[in-house]
Image 1 (cartoon, one colour):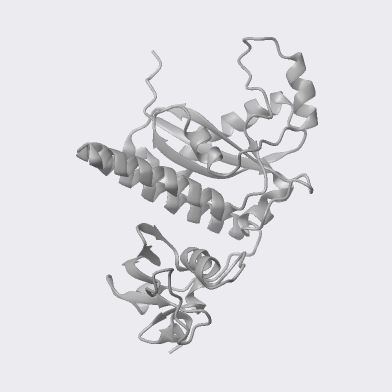
Image 2: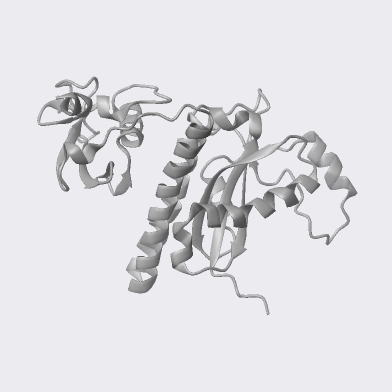
Length: 281
């Protein structure tokens, strides 16, 4: 007897030749024929199993093989996977935060014409989005995560909130892990700054425009700060993530920059000194 699903995987994949561009958080352009596809699949597992990215990726790879039957004309690669409690439509929730216009491949349309009504295959061309970056997808996933947590907390569902927090942490952790694995495979793994050597849990850092005293402030005139929570991760404005993610987000939003990639530790300061300088000392 087939187990009832208790989790939903939302997976992001696209052409293999676009993988490096996606990993570097560069804009995927429709004019250049670049896209991602965001879909979902259901599965059953214990919460303990979700600590392994290989376990989740294995569940998802089957979907990639199925998609190849629907007319996608290029070799594809999984970019990211995210997990939610079982419910249909999480992929749509993520997609609708990214783009209101869908990208239909011409070859997919031709393949769709050959499919009879009621066949199992998912028609290609209904889950594609373009004009996105990896950070935008992450933001969309975090937005869904936080809405779920807020809803369950409001209804007093403590157990569900605890589960959602674990899944939210998984989604962020495995995004980082996939990025590091892909960089290692290409021989371009970047050195990371071990912040545990210079910061303690609860220490507060301040975002600057150039690593000096030019503090970045929000629309209310308040400095952008983040609290260190350990493991090279911070909490900022209700989100958790790495220094680079928050630096890029708020430098672009409040400092008039247009950054695609950034070394966050060059912009975050502690006691007036940028984090990279503190490590060198």
